[in-house]
Length: 178
Image 1 (cartoon, helix red, strand yellow):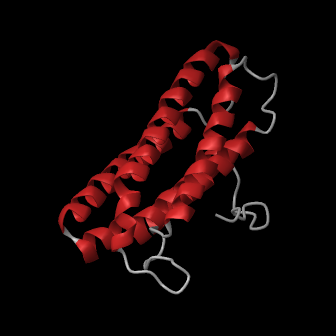
Image 2: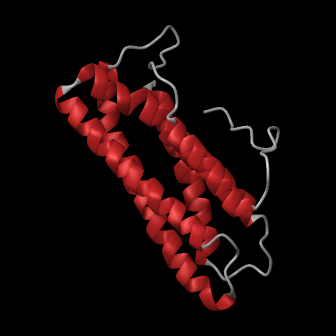
């Protein structure tokens, strides 16, 4: 995956994290004000990014490059998997808009999770992005490999928790260009 694409995805995810952080740092909204859909968009973008990193970067670094690069990729992969597990647990606990009595607890839980996401993206930027030059690329600069389906499946499971819907609406859920 080209460096520019990874960093652009980081910027997009971080901007959305800032928006969510601002939203939960204030008083509890009187109604959900579209919060569930915003949470889903954030989840979709985050987990699609992690799926691409796993399939197109971490896996190839471990399988094709080896050495210190493989060790860094293995560590990043494990940290990402742990974060996704915590993310799924968070969404399962806080699937609905919390009551006024629980808003502060929810806001602290969101802050903790958003800080973990920021730390993970910082780790990618400092430890993994410099290793991208070791990976073969196609004519468009993309690394081999497909997104890791674990995280894609996680995204749909979390979508169900957040939105409580059935099949995805392809037009509404189409990811923005990365």
